[in-house]
Image (spheres, rainbow, N blue to C red):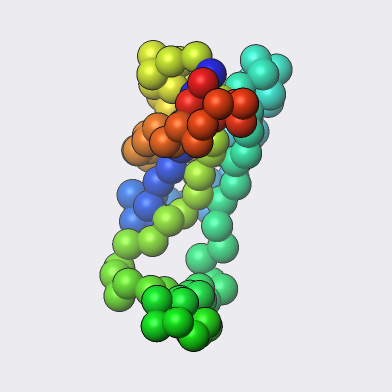
Amino acid sequence: MTEYLIYFNQQWVGDHSEEWFRARGPLAKAVVDEMKAAGVYVFAGGLEEDNAAFTADDTSGTLLFTDGPYVESKEFLGGLTVVNVPDEAAARRWAGKVAQACGWPQEVRRFKPNGPGDGAGA
């Protein structure tokens, strides 16, 4: 089994009414419930938009915490799902279900294998 990250940038969501978003919630929850029932669910969650990000940086040898995102960019991560599936075809199926339920694109990336016995990349 291999873990895949399914995620979206907040900017991919687009402008929609509150009613539209409320209608998407049950669809997304149904996909998560389906993932859990299939035994592929690892984690899923959306990120808060209004709370400021902060960074932790030790590249200078002194740990420094700074308010605000590390990179000045208009794009930021909006939410993510991690699935543990047998192959890329399964990751594609789940990403498609998430994209359909949410109503916006999803990007998928495979996690690097961490080594024998940890369950990732096996």
